[in-house]
Image (tube, rainbow, N blue to C red):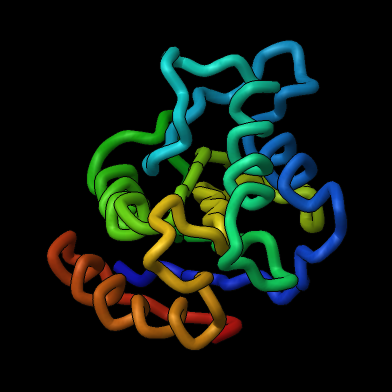
Length: 170
């Protein structure tokens, strides 16, 4: 089964980029926010974390680091050719494996959606928000070149789940 991995082209350099991206994927301003799924050392002691603390932890990681770039995050969308009501099964496990690939080095949060605001049609997809700042002071920021170096691993993980990939925006 073919999936689409889209790396969003927006620059995400604005002051409210982290707030906007995390609020969008989790719907913190909605009556029924999405579950918070994330990996990475964000210094959080509660689960699920308070949405405000969660956003602040991403922002504070960046503020406390000397290794930053103007881009604050990467936004990746993983789209599937079918609609499923709940985010479980191989699609969920594939997305979770991709998040775990980044998590030890760069904090990553992800959420399942099945709406498309542009076409008004349903399709299942996950949003991943990956910090460009590592919690490890020894690691460089997650540049475009560094992000692209993860793509062969993502493709290999997809194959483990019987999925083929089309990557857009690399």
